[in-house]
Length: 80
Image (cartoon, rainbow, N blue to C red; front, side):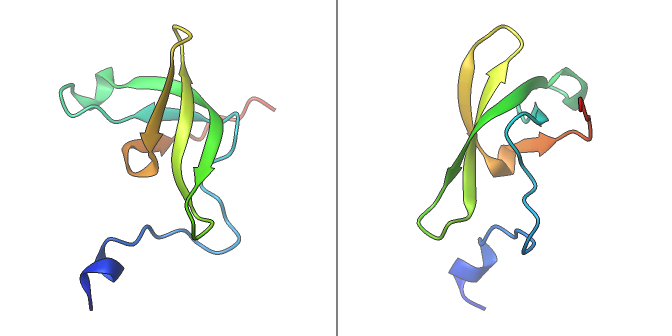
C-alpha cells in the first residue's frame, strides 16, 4: 500500500455525500463539537479526478467560507 492510496478520499460510487442546499456541521478544532458552526452548502468543487474535494458554505451570519470535505459533516436534515 503506497502513501497515495492511504490518503485517498473514499466516496461510494453513485452516492454523493454532499449536495447543494444540504446543512452541514463545520469542524473547528479549537471548540468542542457542540459549539461547531453550521452552514448551508452552496457550491461543490471537484478535483481533476472528478471527485468532490471541497465545498462552499454559507454561514447563518451570511459569511461565505470554503472547507475541504474532510472538515465538513453533512447533517441529516431535510427541508423538502
